[in-house]
Structures are given as structure tokens and as C-alpha cells.
Image 1 (tube, helix red, strand yellow):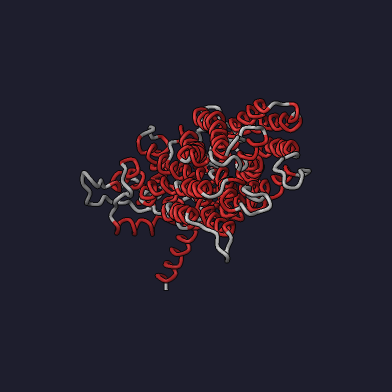
Image 2 (spheres, helix red, strand yellow):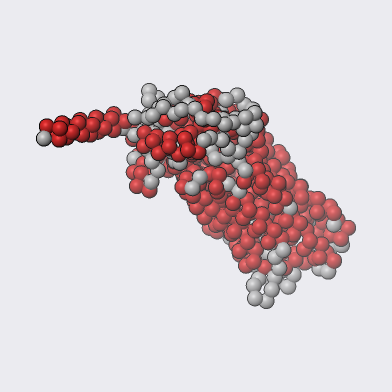
Length: 580
């Protein structure tokens, strides 16, 4: 049985003794319930804004680094391929390698950081991924060709490392935001973090436009990319390095705040099983302190006494495989992972090739090199501002009222129709009509499955496996992105004349994407609706709710029976000894 936790001395106006707020409650499960209720029912405040900003700046950096490659590969072609068969144009295999490298690293980062955050804690891992992103980004901007190693090899190496960092940011930012969020606005908070991806895409296009304007007079001297040598080639070499290097700036700003963010109380309760520290951390988070201050002797004694009494099962590999092997739980992981996979096939198949698609529909051509780069940047800005950014923020505004699942299913249905229209009417539509459909697709990607596939995995798994489940789901998405880049994307040039940059099979690629979107409708049926439900309810811990699952809660009645039986046995033994 739990012993009464006595009040401790210490604390002042600056360092409140949060331990004493729960000192009158003996049952550790009740202390946990009351402390988490404070988080779930807290009014939206500045501490929530701080969590959104700290996590969101990381996603801004991630999106910037991912999507800046749209413009950068065109610049790399001008700088490093002037002596190739097609001067001034990057070969398709090099283009694919550079783009796939990031997704490959992201898969590794999502799985490894996701699992490690469940083992060693969210706080210990948070910030490590940002350090890796900053370092790899700066290294890319300083890369150069050499006789021993091509520029593609060097950039691919650094983008794989950068991808590992970006991958780690997915589960960590999602889980930390989810576990600190108030239940009422948890979807909006997580959506706001993810919406920074749109701002990052906008910034990548804007920085590209700014550097293009800065070197306008020099770029106008070359009428085509194969003529951009000498001074023109020099400024393009500066341009791509500036575009890439700028991606490290927001990461440096956010790094301190990530390294000092407190551990989530849910992790401290359920995995670290430190009831007193977690209860104090709840209060500390709401006052802006990095950690609650408690009496260490009392904390250690209580942790030893209370850990085995907590109803939440202890995390272990055997428990994880047992948990996921049950269809009720396994179907959720299959639903989140497969929905993200199907989405990213089309989302990254398009997103990482915006410039190519804009060229095909006539929005990225020009009479000189300046106009080519200018139109590419403006085209990306149009797509981002007209489609992507509004889509993200409509999700933020509606996800806690409409719900995650309806938005996801609606998005897949509409995207299926859009890709069918583009694919089968491609040669009948004008360039402006195609651009309009493309912008609408970007809107419903983000007011649809692109946002919800990020939000739902951060809510629907129990705390002890929440980060791992999110990491596995996100990694499935990036595997879809790799397939889109390696297998489906290259099909667009099928039937093109040797040396041509035409994409005669682009309409068929869009038809293929429509099949993936259609399949996403059915995988979305496997995921639960998480709107305005506590994380503990979604984990099946709350009796009397449809989600309740006895296997996710220790069988306390059985434990009590064992304790009583052991007590009777010991008393009988003592009587025997007394009789002798």
C-alpha cells in the first residue's frame, strides 16, 4: 500500500515547492490522474504558445531544408554541369539522388529518435536532432567538387545526415506538443506546429527569389543555362550556397529553448515512474520553469514505494510486441502508417518536383537565366501561398471541431478526384487550368491527410510507445516518398527524346497518384477519431469509455489478491513458529 507522502520544507517565490500541492494524496494513481487533469483542462495560455513556437521553429527549418532543394538543383546544374552532354542541366540520376538522400536519412531518424525518446526520454533527445540539422546544413553550403569525390556524393552524404535530424524532429515535436497540450485545443496546437512547414516552404521560395533579384544584372547576361559561365556561373554558385546555408539560421535560434524544455510529465509518470517529480513538473511547466523542485530524499523514497503500484504497465520490448499483436492496437498502427505512406507517395512526388512540373505547364520558363530562376521562385510562392499555407491554417481552425478522421477522409476523396482530372484531361487543359488544379491539390493535401497523418499518431498510442508509434508511422511515409522519387517520378520522362527535358508521361504519373489517394480513403477507416479525448482515454486506460482496454491497465484486483494471499501465508507461518 502507498504510504502517506509528507510535506517537505523549502521553496520560495521564485522556486515554488510544487511537491506539497499533492502531499495529501497517498495513492500514486490518483496523484497522476489529478496532475494530468491539470494539463488536460488548463486554459490556453502563453506556456502553450511557447511549446508551439519551440517545436514549430524546428518544423520551419525542416520544411525549408527539404523543399529548398527544388530551386537548388537547377542552380547546381548551371554551376557543375556546364561540360556535360546537356550543359547547364543536372542529370536526372543526380537530381534523384540528392532528393532521395534526405528522405532516406529521414526514415532512419524517425525510427531511431522515435524509439530512443520512449527509452531515454523526450527531453534528452530534443535538441540533438536540431544540432545535427544545423551542422549538416552548414556543411552542405560549403561543399565543393573534387577529383576524388563528386559534388553529388558530398551533398548526398550531408543530406543523409541532415535527413536523420529532420526525421528525429517528427516524433519529438509531435509528442512533446501533444503531451503538454490542453485536450480541448490539442489538435490546433499540433496543427500549428505542423503548419510551420508551410511557412518553411514559403521562406525557401522567398530566399531563392531574393538572391535571384540580388544578382539580376549578372544573370540577365546569359540567355540560356548553357551560356551561364564566368561571372554568371560565379553568382549562381553563391546563390545556391546562400539558399542552403540560410536554413541553419532558425535552427540556431530555437536550439537553446529546445535544450531547456522540461520533460513531459506523462513520460515521467508512465515510463520513468517518478510520481512526485512528474506532479511537480506539471506545475513548473505552467509557470515557465524547466523543472519542478522537490525534496530529493522524499522523491527517491516515494519512487521506490510507488512505482510498482502504478496501474500503467511497464514498457518493454515483450510488452510492445504483445500490445501491437492485438488487432485492436495493431490496426491503429497499420492505419496511421499506411495512410502516411500512401499520402507521401503523391505529396513528395509533387512537392520535391515543383519546379519540374511548373516548367511543364509553362510557369518556369524565361528569355534569360534571371527569368528562369525568377519564374521558378514565383511559381513556388504561388503554390505555397495560394494552396499550402491556407490549407494548413484551415486545418488548425477546424481540426478540433470537425475532427481528424473526417478531414483526412475528405482530403483523400477530393485529391483522388483532382489527380483523376489532371491525369485524364491533362492534354485538354490549359496551363492556367493545370496550375489552378495543382494549387487546389496543395490546399487539400494540407487541409486533409498531410496534417492529420502527423496529428493522429501523436495522440492514439499509449505514452510508453507514443513516440515509437509516431516514428514508425512517419517512416512509412518517407518510404512512400522514396518510392515516388525512385520508381514513379522517373516515369514522367518515358518516351521523351534523348536530351529532352520533356515529361510526356506526366499525365500517367498523375493517374498513378490518384490510385494511391483512393487507397488512402480505406486505410483512414482504421484510425480512431481523437478529437477532444484525453490521451489516457485514447490509450484505453479510462473505465466506462468505448476505448477502455483492460490489457492497457495493470490488473489491480489480481495484484491485491496476491498481496492478501501472501499476507495470510506469512501470518500462518508466524503462528506455526509461535506454536513451536
